[in-house]
Length: 64
Length: 467
View 1 (cartoon, chains in turn red, cyan):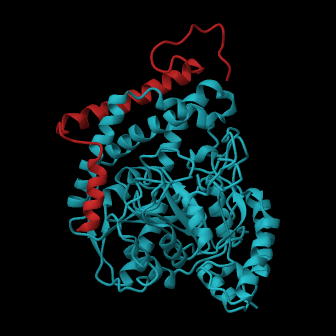
View 2: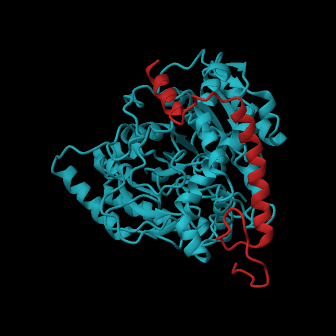
């Protein structure tokens, strides 16, 4: 959908993407919902948690 | 008279080796069936009849000359059109494609070719494999061979429709949020989504590399075992493809399953439509009769897993498409465009939190959910198979909710990386649907043994429109 020139340019995340305001609002709202979960999970995550833990556990399971 | 459409790939390969049928005759018949399947389901993106027949004749000549060939020698197959094949440009189900022809085969294509498998077509997929229903707003929607008004499931829609129709015995697909399981279930057939890292993704179109898993769709579990055995294993081209030894899945197909513990998360299953719950109970009853013992289990909070997999997937997808989304937004279909946009709104910190937490949730699942069970059973679809019209939501306001309901039981499993076997429910004259058996990492052989036993009670079917 082409950008409507009557709409003010977007700011915030993904400002460069050509999105109608209602889709932008929906995306923001959904991302905010997911962020709540991320914050809750982060609160229980040790500092040492690492993105490679997942692979390490998979491999360890194969060896067990 | 050999009923070719009902044969497994393994049985067809044996018949070709025994010269009960030539590869050329089997391939010609498969092409004919695939054309009929396409008319009904829109499953084909490009037919490759001439090259397939030439390859079939070459296979016949090699067999005639007494050459020792691979386990799929002369067997007509076809795959989701997202794998590099030397000299070709894969469609990716999209308007946007690679700039040039592939210079190397995807590892999975190379391994199937080395085993003698032929390719008779490139098959339909959801645009960029990013959609769970089989809708494709760029190339046309796929239709279910049991009822063309209904969805095939996606994104490996064409493979599932062609296999279910009996055009081909098996084909490749991929699964980032359910794309092997949903179409297998909707079309009443089987699929294996292996453990993440079990199969190389080299030369496969990336969607969300943290989650992407290449797997197989087939009517017969023995073909899943045969083909996964050919595909699995380390690959220098994909560092995520693990060096964990590959078992002889075929040799283990008939391992005893009595006494295996089947886990039921009653609260989670209760969130499915009552009809789906009843179908799952039917499957459980069959597995109990075969000696499986049921036990209660509890997955980690499912909504948390579902949010974490979205936090993983959406930025991954958005990053891969960031340039095209900025420069060629109108070349995307409305639904994929809207879903890709979402990834741009997720902060990097949240994405990394989901990735950092992934090991913890896998560990929790193995220690708690699988503490007293060997495998878990879950629905694939939460609801009876919807119509194409019901899920024709485009980029509208119900998009997120509609997609979330479709992938409710599949997407969180990708976050955990666990292997999953899809089996069709007993139809009893009704529409198809499926369940998924979820195993511990690298437990594919165990899943196949259960699936093999199950198919002795619920045999593979060939799909035709229900009247």
